[in-house]
Length: 252
Image (tube, rainbow, N blue to C red; front, top):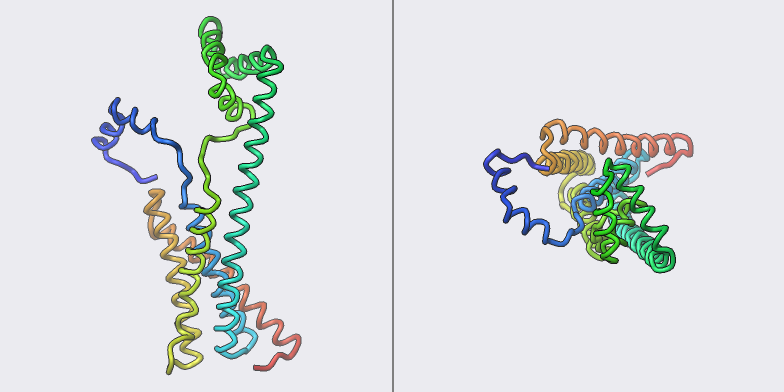
């Protein structure tokens, strides 16, 4: 998270500010979806481009394969993200139904679970009794407490549609950058590959830099770290294309 000044932190912890913040419903963060989609999109297209270079194939092949992979992989990744979140939501709903059934049928046993959970947190005596009584007298709160404490399920509202959309848009938007040189008429094939690699590197550094601004980490270190990760993947694609070209005698 971004670092704030002492005055800003003091203002954020004013009683009224705390009340308003706690009254807001928790939402899902799209940062992870955007970062994952961006990095994967850039790696996908840059890998195709450098793979064709290693294999000695033409620039037109790089463009066709790059666009095909960009759209297909972006869609596949978005669908996978959607299905993953839906599966997680279905799991949470099934666990909630189980806990509700247990509370309805064996409330004594569920209260004992509640007691032992807060006992492990260091509560005892009258304080522990008050906590158990307060929570068990509020059924929705009781269920949510068991979900978090017994199963480790956090109360975060995930939107499969939103996550899938963010993933796809970030994938395609950033992933298009390495393909842009192949759409410029008059640029030599060698120039297209060089510019594509440079743009890919710039995108990796940009993604890392944006992460640093969000999570308050050094910009240069974060940018270079992401750049090295992307470069390693791109280098692997080039090496694979080159080896296959030599082994199978592939000609442009």
